[in-house]
Each structure stands twice: as C-alpha cells, then as structure tokens.
Image 1 (tube, chains in turn purple, orange):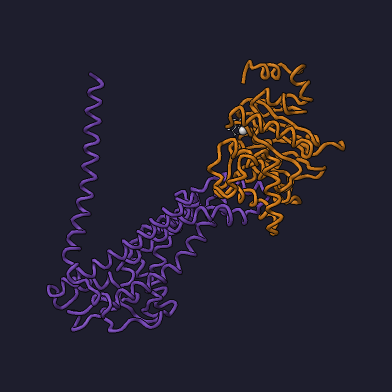
Image 2: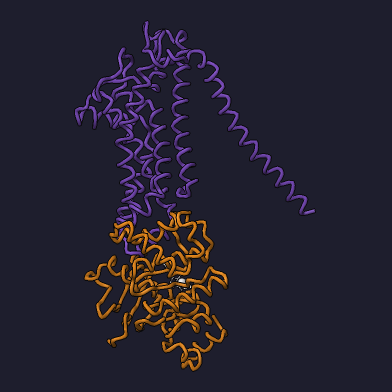
Length: 288
Length: 253
Ligand SMILES: Nc1ncnc2c1ncn2[C@@H]1O[C@H](COP(=O)(O)OP(=O)(O)OP(=O)(O)O)[C@@H](O)[C@H]1O
Ligand SMILES: [Mg+2]
C-alpha cells in the first residue's frame, strides 16, 4: 500500500518536472518561430553586405554587423586577459582573508549591476574621462567592464575544477608555484575559462544599454575606419527599427531580419564555446 | 646527529588552525633504510610525512613548532627553498595522481620543470625510470597513450617512476598501496625493497604485514603522539608499549 503511494508521488513528480521543461521549451520555440518566420524573408546576401538606404527603409545592415564585430573584439581584448589574470590571482595566489573575500563579494555584486548603469559609467570614464569620445573604443571598454565580473567568476570556477592533486603532484616534483600553475593547472582550466568567457562575450554582443551613450550611432552610411569612430550595432539598430524609426510599421521586416542575424551570431558564438569544450574534453583535459 | 641519519624531526608540534594534530614528535630517519609509519586513521601520519617535503604549506592556517632537519640543516625556515627541498625529497601520494598527459609526458614533466631540455636525455631517463618502477613491460608499446588509461596499480607505479626520474634522495610514500590489488601491492613492495639500495624511504601504511615486510624501522603514531619507535623486528616482536602491542595485534585501530 505504502509502496503504491510513493509510486504515485514519483509519477506525479516526474510529470510536473516534465511539464516545466515543456513550458520552457515551448517559450523558446515560439520566440524562435516568430523571429525566424518573420525575419527569414528579408535576410539575404544583400541584407548582410549592404548598408541601409532610403532613410533606413531599404538596404541591409552591414555596418551594424561590422560595428558589433568590432566592439566585441575590443570587449574581448579588454576582458579576457584581465578576467583570466584576475581569476588566476584570486584562486591561486591570494590568501583567503578578509580582503579577498571582500573583493570576491564585490565582483559578484558587480555582475548584478544593471547594464544601463555601466553605460552611464562608461560615459564618465571612457567617453569623457579618457577622452575616447563616443567611439568603438569607449563602447568596447564599457562592455568589457560589464563582462569582467562574469569572466572572472567563470574563470575561477574553471580553475576550481582542476584537482588539487595536479597542483600537489607537480609541486612535489620540484616545480615552482609558477611552473605548476602555468604547466599543470592552466592547460586544464583554459577550456572551461574559454567557455565562460565566450558566453560572457556573446551576452555583451547583444547589449544595447551600455553602448547607447558611449558610441552607437543611429545611422552611418559607411563602416567605421578607426577605433575612435562611432559605429552602428545590431542590438541598437534593432532598438531603433522597432521604436525610433519614423515609419515603424514599414521597417518591421528589417527589424526582424536584424533580430534574426543577431540571434544567429550569438548562437554561433555559443556553439563555438560548446564545441571547444567538447573537443578539449574529448582530449581528456577539460573538467568543467 | 649520527652519520647515517638523513632526516630528523625534533619536538615537532603541528596545528591545523587551533587543532593540534602532532604532539612533540621526535624521530630519526636512517639513510638507505625503509622507515614505516603506522597508526590508526587520523593519528597524523600523512600530516607528518607531508612536513618532510613541506607539502603542508599549501594548506592554509597551519602552524609548526619544533624543527625538522635534512642532512643536519633545518628545512622549516626561510633559509630552505621548498622547491629545492622537494627535488631532493620526493613524494608518492596515497591516491595515484597521474596528470592527464601521455605516459611519457607524465615522467618527462618532472625533468622539464627542473630545467632538463635535452630531448635524448629526457627520453633516456624516462625509459630508465619506467624500467626501475617495474612498469616497462606493461607500457613499452603505449608510451604516448594517456596515463589515465592505465589501471590503478599501473598508475601508482607510473607515479613512482615520475618521482624516480628526478632522482631524489629521499622518497616519501603515503599509503602507496591503499587503492591497489594484492598483485600490484606485491609489485610495489618489491620495488620499495629494490629502491632501498639507492634511496632513503619513508612509508606510511595501514597494513601491518606490509610494514613488517618492507621496513627496517617502524614508528607507531597514536592520536598525534609517537608512542614508540624502534627497529621493525623489535616493534613487531617485543613492543614496549601496551598500545603498540594492541595495535599490531589488531585489537584496536
Ligand atoms: N587540511 C586539513 N585541515 C584541517 N585538519 C586536517 C587537515 N588534514 C588533516 N586534518 C586533521 O588532522 C588529523 C590527522 O590527519 P592525517 O591525515 O595526518 O591522518 P592520517 O594518520 O594520515 O590518517 P589516515 O590513515 O586516515 O590517512 C585528522 O584529525 C584530520 O582530521
Ligand atoms: Mg593519511
């Protein structure tokens, strides 16, 4: 009798869990379906290689793709080495004391700060403070700052998955701490670090708020020619096309096309992260 | 200090935080001999031998009192570089810990971090150490396969080979056979007896027969104290302390 009751609980429990999963999946499917069906019609070779024309009612989104590419590069250049370095320091060198605990807590808190706040901060620090002006550099740095907490946390997690035995093993063989970290810890942590970092970058690539005041332009006929140029970016373009344009209903398809391209781009970045990890794990060196 | 004494602990107290786990340990480790350390779980055996190559430094919040000597020189202070020390005092861990590299690279690693660059020399030493560790026949055709594909016993002998490659003078074994089957255990024991000719060996073990078979000296630890230390035959035939006798006859532990 008792056994039967617990069986019912189990069946019910799993049913509820399955429902949860179906719900989530359904939401995703609906979003994708909506964007793909409405966007696929406008996405063409022309669309991704030509600038907008006729008051942005026709043409493509080439400058926005290029702009997003460049700011993401700047973001990566800033946040990847800094984030990894910081994580290595915190996890391998820093003593566990009040100060490091405070630093860790601050990093966690920073990752919860709304992106628009980073945008304002970027204006103060990069646009005005460093005299970068509204530019690719200022926007990239702002995004870099925003992803830094994520990169640090992800990299530290990756370092934590490397067994203590590897560190002890190499030290016991007469390796210095630096050698041990460099040759017997980092190689096994890098896949995980990369995965976390790429995920952080893909999030940055889709952000609008931090680039809003730091360099994103409404419309530029040409692609930027230096890091001090203003730029167009996919998420911002999407925002304009769906709220700021003088004829929103006319450009709706372009907005959907932009959304589709943005999603594909981010999806591609995430896939790269997953594939990297898969390959390195197959080689038997990733743990995450 | 006698001529044939390689390492010596003098009145060692050791604390993890406030918790004292070693109490006034004084012990001598003889040259070209096997010293076994036995005692019930948690009595501080691992803690003790990890002091001999300063491995406990990696643990935060510890405190060491007393002195530890290696060839008459103190190894606990700043005047001793732990990296130098660990080159001379090698360690094989309780759980085999091969690195996720090839068998060859696992052994070459120790040489590389110690600055050996000559490829031929590395190859020669790698093969030599594998042979010394009685592993050659089993791995000679798969030197470049991952070490993680080896059995537990093979992995442990690989770790021994890795340790031998850097030619230490003292080797610390922390329960090297804890995760091995009787056949692998037998191989490792034979190896230890063989190594005794060239090295000074300290071995922690839970296995009384093993201590009796391989060691020349035995120290019995109990709750952080060293109850008795003597020639192995004395400890196993005429122990002076009641606790030692109870332990080796299996009445507690
Ligand atoms: N890193 C650590 N932090 C705090 N306490 C520790 C740590 N390592 C060991 N201890 C404590 O120190 C005591 C001695 O541990 P140790 O590992 O030296 O015992 P052992 O004799 O090797 O036992 P076993 O035979 O089970 O391996 C134990 O009470 C243990 O809980
Ligand atoms: Mg132990």
